[in-house]
Image (cartoon, rainbow, N blue to C red; front, side):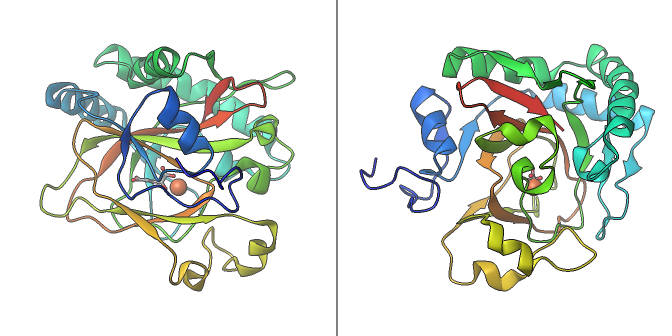
Length: 266
Ligand SMILES: O=C(O)CCC(=O)C(=O)O
Ligand SMILES: [Fe+2]
């Protein structure tokens, strides 16, 4: 561990490999001292294909106003930024029903992930809940097959009025359920956390940022592997490559509160 890196701003990644999940790697990830954490063998190939089959039977819908298109089952805070808070919580309620139908006929990656975090990190892990609006949705089933723009996922920057904006660090977990073995669509995570002045370099009318923001910046190449969970710090700029075929994940945001408790939402 480097001794000079206490804050996200001046840290330098200690190597370019993902580490197995434990208390120490978790702390390093939240401080942006390592690029990623991996949980290998999180789900079997049978569990993954069963979940995909059940999700397909329910049907995916496209994200609103996102290009290239991304399909998902679940509600996202991203699509309800601004004054649209109660619509989000209504949708979250609706999708909770669909999600429990899918998970009960396959398995619950969400419950499994929460247990693993409790065991490995040793802190309480809950679905995020707003005292006024209720419980957030957590756990999207998502298809990113045409890649993404360079972006961040960080509630203090993007949803400042929401309860989840009180998180200190924000990460995401992705369980890869379905991949093209030849061309699985890599995810690039740059060692460059979002800063307020970066808002000036957002591409108008999109969720993306100017690619020049990460020119010459150290990057971690995540080549997804079936049945494994990868967790990375989504305050860092990141981008997904188009894949050769199906690329289906289960995913949510993970936040750490000032008292170290962990909350999940989508
Ligand atoms: O699908 C992936 O590998 C990562 C997608 C992403 O941008 C995220 O989880 O924040
Ligand atoms: Fe992202």
